[in-house]
Length: 279
Ligand code: PAF
Image (cartoon, rainbow, N blue to C red; front, side, top):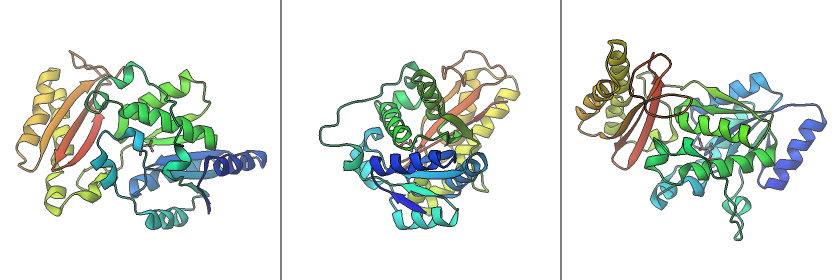
């Protein structure tokens, strides 16, 4: 497994793969790899010849310094997991290699970044689109695999690729869940055992929302069903739940086929997100 630490090394590796006739699958991550990430790696491996995992905790997409500082960075375990999973290359640049002291260019997303996570975390998606553009530029992947847990991110990245003609096929991999239904996330590692037990209210709230939608509820009733489940859990603090159109990401005023529901819930200083198809 090759370890790449600068954009120049990444580009050289990428050029070599293409020169030798191999397609590249990229799994962009911020590390603290779990089974969910490894499922993305398997997905990429089925579609392409050479798989690269990028590991970079991107400061541009964090709103709070404390969240950035406390983000888990178990790089040795991550490299071992990649090696075991048969990954061909890991791109793990330093902050300075990604953002020089003169760095000032940003890729600015449009209206898709205005609601849900974008409304709660100003500037977050600008950080994501900027770093994803840099990763794509350095690694020139044919395919990139993103998890559907960050559903808004997936939609924005698809728009980014289409708008800037980046020529990367974007795959949205279904959410990987623990046996009790909690969506796998690197942030789960920071939950105390009590918070981890309480966090099952997040997928359950989406189950309640789905049941309310199937029973013919209005969007407000669907949201309320989810809110009630979270409100019954003392360790949880509800932030938002929304019923939205997956193409526009806009809130809807009527429940129809093909909609999704998304939520964000806090446990102490840890914020978990989840979403699912309402039908
Ligand atoms: O989903 C993530 O882990 C990050 O937002 C990404 C896509 C790696 C960009 O930093």
